[in-house]
Length: 454
Image (cartoon, rainbow, N blue to C red; front, side):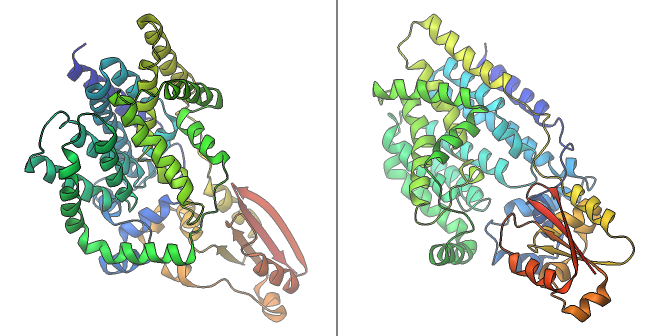
């Protein structure tokens, strides 16, 4: 089949599938944060970035897009769906250049039927854009394979895409490192060993306006740690599971990779590229997280397309007869398709919290939400248009801790606790001392609603 027609068909199919069920899940978790801050005046938005872990590019895209379409969850997720659908294009191109048509098709189909990538395609967050830019950047590297030198046009194009990636997510700088790893490990990319540092320098210059914020956030994480826990060893397998849809598929994929790795096929460019793009960054971030935890499924989104390439390249490198290679490749794509569930409901349902509060708030009551970021989930569940209004009073005010006299005047006090742990146990204990009766209900995933009354 004509490669251009294949890519066109893959992109069209990805776009069709990823635009389906866009509004099935509520705007939840980190999405209300993105939407809210995309609507704030630029002065407030710039001040927020000083304490935020994500650069501004995706917020600005959401701001521009939301001005053109209905202010609804499905419409706000359209850019992510498009970014994810387009990612199959450079992935197919990379795999085809390094491993041939069969490797390219299998890698593209594994990506297409990935629940992991589908989830990010349905989030009004930066991760689908990060995936597209990461994959695109590697295609800009790979398309120069076999050349003795890299021209200025290629150097500047890579720098521009890398700058967009760094302005999308700070971990984009890790992807810049993966590109250099490509140049070291993949045959035919030797010329980039001299030119890539120059491209990275241009990227740094383009990123310079945000460099102070980036370095400040990085130093804070190094000095005080992150909100994540140190990952256990099984998290390595769990990540492969997420990338493979189901445990049995993950085991089969890892078994194929292990068999081929035992044969040490580093002379195969597609296999070396898959290792450099997926398992090596996975292991590196896991090890780094023993000191500064950054190991999170979404933070590894840039490496996930590389896993699809690695599986496809491993199938081609098994040394089996061609008929069996084709059969195993088809089985891998079929396994992903069978375990693909794009219609499934999301984990979070803030409307359940709003409903529980309404059910318990008979007449007048006082409502507090902790942590403060969950206020945006709560107000979005009540009315998404509230995300276009100033909610700074809710986000900045500490929760009320009434004494006995204040408690009697308040009547019913409702506490929404979305911490999922003991972070606000002191507040709950103080409220129990001030009120005679307490009820509790699990209203959403890791979200408790407490009713205190006398």
